Image 1 (cartoon, rainbow, N blue to C red):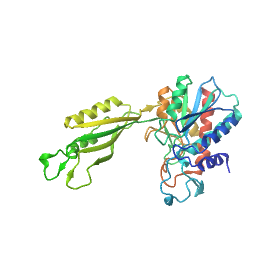
Image 2: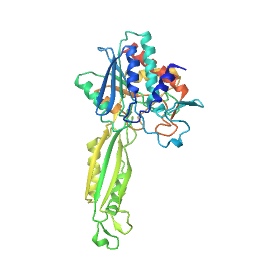
Image 3: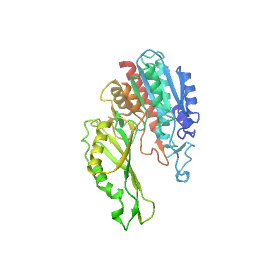
Image 4: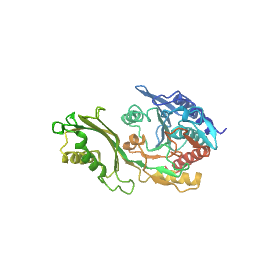
Length: 377
């Protein structure tokens, strides 16, 4: 049993459904301490976080990740027990295998290998782990970054171990993410009997054309790094359940995934303009999940492409597709931020799994990144 498999199995055996940590961070802190890292647990509310550092005065490379996982869903749908890591047909099955405990295990082994040959490295090393990535993400990485910023502890390079690959580890590196802006729209009407339309104001009828305009609008054309901004309606709710009563209100939830061609203010303004054109009586509440970020160039991107070529003999694809990650909290500090991990094909699904071969690939990729940064920083 390889060291990375042993570590992954330990983490995957823990039922750390968000926001629980189930001892993952204590175990990780012990392993890091044995390597010479100085651990600093940070708890905010009920959420456990771990900040750990090796060195204190050089340029800082940080591995960021999360020990929490999403719920399993119906156990009967799983082929294996989700918290009993199982090898089957060349895959390691478990909740969190891809998202993202295997990446944590691989980075831990890569740190050990790197420090064995570089006990006094030319760079500092850091680890930022949270148990609040799959949940609201309000007491996790964002709070740790606040602490680091206040004491002027700057991250130069950050690698987030999120599952980024399409087929095998290394085939895709994420060098940025689109922003995510959520809206809760309430359109007001007048409830009434369907047989007396002159006495009512049906908010569904009023909203139909406005929603059609919102969903058909071309917000921008994207750019070299990002696809065009998109809007998706995720929920619509109205009515009392009776067939002969029109609703008083219509509630709509929608989300923008936006490129750097847009700002939060520009999206809000364009949305307001469309809604106002239809003379609706409405209220809208906004919630920003994260702004877009991009690492266009830099030594970290060079290190990643070099490492993947060395470890996997493939040319990686640089992409900004997909959802959000905790990189959105780290990039605004000025750090170069990349995401690199195993395949995301089964994340959040039943029978989540990772190719066994990708465990060692990740170790090699991460180790080569450390060596490159250490040689070229």
